[in-house]
Image (cartoon, rainbow, N blue to C red; front, side, top):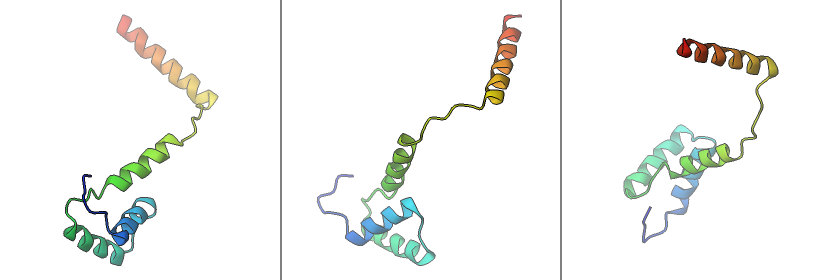
Amino acid sequence: MNRSQPISPRLDELLFVRALEGLSDGEERELAMLLARERDVDARIYERAAAAVCIATLAPTALPVDLRASVEADAAEILNRKDA
């Protein structure tokens, strides 16, 4: 977003809250009104940032042993079919 003017504090707050927890119907209407006034604002940037933080902070988890064995067996079967 290339803006010469800073985003209004209320618009900033509504975009932030929407990305993290959602807005009430009244807040959604207010946000739509503010965005109509500031058309050069990328309204999805907060959601993309929140998603990136969530993905970056996910802890890697190992597959349960039974599931891993099943996936490996299925993969071996599929690979053997292609070789035949």
